[in-house]
Length: 301
Image 1 (cartoon, rainbow, N blue to C red):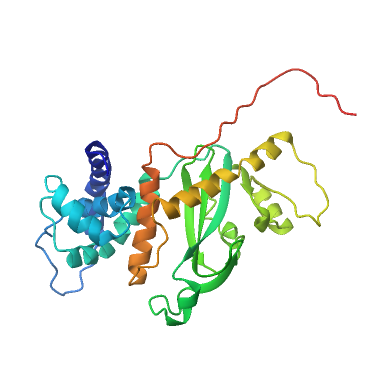
Image 2 (image 1 turned 180 degrees about the vertical axis):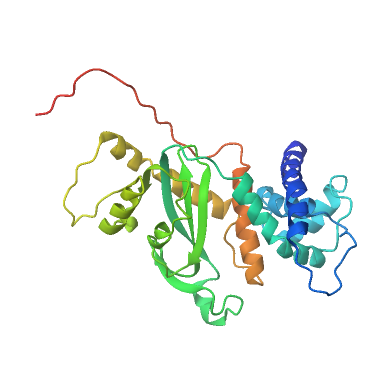
């Protein structure tokens, strides 16, 4: 289970964000002439968002068991005004905007000049149930990864050498991995070198990113000619497995992927909350890379 100090840390961070977010949203709220709710909700936004994130750190596989057996029974002192399970599921999805803004503003790391990018499949259901799936009809698509065909979406993430998330984007399963890199907002805060696998090989894309001050480094395919690469890039390219470890933790520890969704809103809420939960991990997969300046001349044969 989660330590009480960790729960307090997460709640305080989210509550500080909500103290700024809620007044700003009230100022931007447009009145339509209809009656609006002035009575406060039983649970605060910070409590709802905190419980949503805590589920992905708890290790419990189903949210219903987590909420009824853990939150309502063992965390009564921390959350004394809990609502029914069905009502909380409604509130959880209605607070997707503050959940996403909190991730974007408070949970992302800073670029260090060494970045890694990769995509991972987020399956909506098992392949044999694709034809019967109604939740993601006309939304999810069929795509192919190194593990075979799947039905669902792709999660594209960028991390730094410390294992911190720098940005993310969600696309349909049939979208090419290189497509998000052509969007300026996705790489807005990224500089230096960006390391990727063979799926990102593109002469045109490399040229475009180079003009933007970003060096895209990928390994080469067997049928391609060898290219010159610095020893630094060769070493860091071998360390690219760190992002695959993070993808594995997101899906198997933070539960970013499961087939129990009953609505698209629930799917997005679950995915965003899992990314926030990862940012609160004490130890993240990281690499140690140090450079040593020397005046010694390099000899070439």
